Length: 272
Image (cartoon, rainbow, N blue to C red; front, top):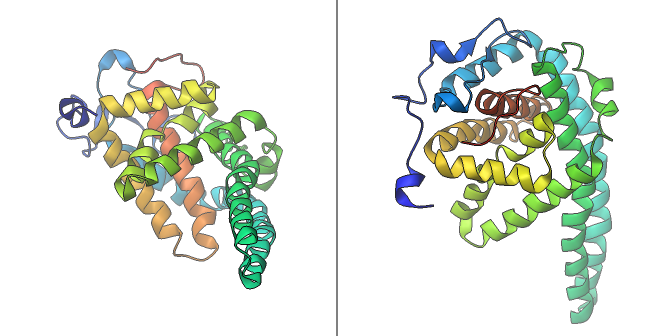
């Protein structure tokens, strides 16, 4: 990104400060809903507003959000176990055989399984997670729950898988530029999945919208994504329970940010 664009943020004096104009605590989904400012205001909501709104929401509805996370884990844990068994066993067997050709074949199989196989699971799972949290933020207080999560696993499967493959591919390119490159890719894609869920955008259009907005408001996105990343990082160090609450929190928080910038399902805001 150009230097002047990279460090341009919103017109607000401090994107971390809570702003009364951006917050509506009586909106949909209970505690701490955030109003969509819209492109015509040319300003972004303070990061602290959305983070605290998500915390207040989870304090009041932790059990319901936790059931969504439980549904996610009931899919991911068996799936990851199977992928590890099917992927690593041939690779380890090839190493034991000391056959170079088999070792390369096993490594290639492991890489293909990691990208394609995980996409078949992670794509629908993450889309379902974001979809159910978005319905909740739209005002459907009955959306949360174990049954609600499983009912959404088949929602837009092609788009969900396509996005995960695209994100994984771009992530691998980012890794070529070391940890900073990987982080830049994650930040650039931070609003792509919400765009697909909220406004039903296609994979390419969603990624383009997200990357364009990040390019124009990098500092704001750095702070916004950074807080979400910290939550997921902390959750990853708490066995089982951490991800059960951490991932729904991350989805809810990222959706609040997207909806505050581009509006909810009834809006048609374009990136600005």
